[in-house]
Length: 453
Image 1: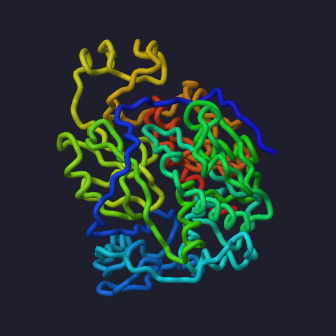
Image 2 (image 1 turned 180 degrees about the vertical axis):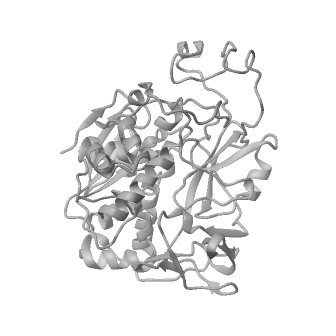
Image 3 (image 1 turned 30 degrees about the horizontal axis):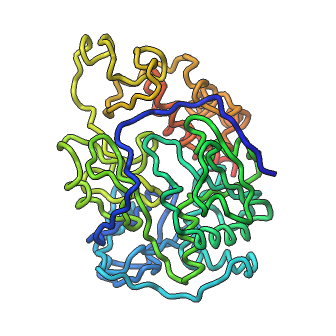
């Protein structure tokens, strides 16, 4: 049964640099990279080697510990390089992309008429399975697990987040096919979370075979973890799959056409970005050409994802597998004199989660913020700020401390099975102790996986 949830906790970080609702095509990138580091805990087993020719949909590696989960190329071309790090760990598989993409062609399938095992095997063989993320742990879903539900968030409230209504416009058929396929993977329900204050695109509003719930409130109202917590919380021994809303349409396109079409619309955002639009590109695209021609200044940070949870990829980096946004912010590596630009200044150009600066009086103003932490890590103290932005019925400070001290019983009792690092991004932002909270939560989840699952 659908419901409307109004959240009272959260924080909207109002940044300058939202993307205009305009679509632009990017030329096919010369290089595309698939990074095993995008899939936490993955140990890849290579299928290809440098010099091999691949098509879009060709398997390039699989999970060493679960060979049913395959990872495929988003483009056709030649494998250029396998980049390795310490202890020969694979960091990237680089592919020189063809101008015209050739696809591995399979037979289209109507998921509504197929049985559950057929849909599952189709997704595994086609390389679609990595789009499914599993909770607990926040890793690629285990195909041997039966999820009690599948959750999709149809909107995003992160800083400068892409507008999924705009992205999905005209993809009604593909989105519905994706929903029908996902519904076969669970004996429970597929839940779709929508913004209570905005009427969505037809693809979202008219979706069938789903339970629609609406959420109202500040960030992280659009986070799928928040929606799970308020609709169907996860207990120990239970599993839930989540899928990004744009990836649902990608899955649907495969079932309709038999082709792994990895194209997506990516929002180019941030105060230092110029020509801020929605660019059509592919998963793993090298962003060098886009960034060098559409950025102000040279001292910037290029982030794949949003400012709270994204990855610093540099000016020549590649779009991460799950990201639908690129954020360009000023690099915060300049010293600030404390009487003018620092903490003793008047602060008319500063955003604060507390009421430290007078700008809290203007709730509509947007800010140009850099990446400076304005301090370094210090003693982890109780301030009460985390509880104001964390809309879970969970004690965030206590759970983080349990993660830091490797207290397994404490983590289990405090709700570790419900959360992943992104759920604590705002806690990290408001933390006066400058602790890397998302990293601590990931360490806690790794320990839970090792000892309890």
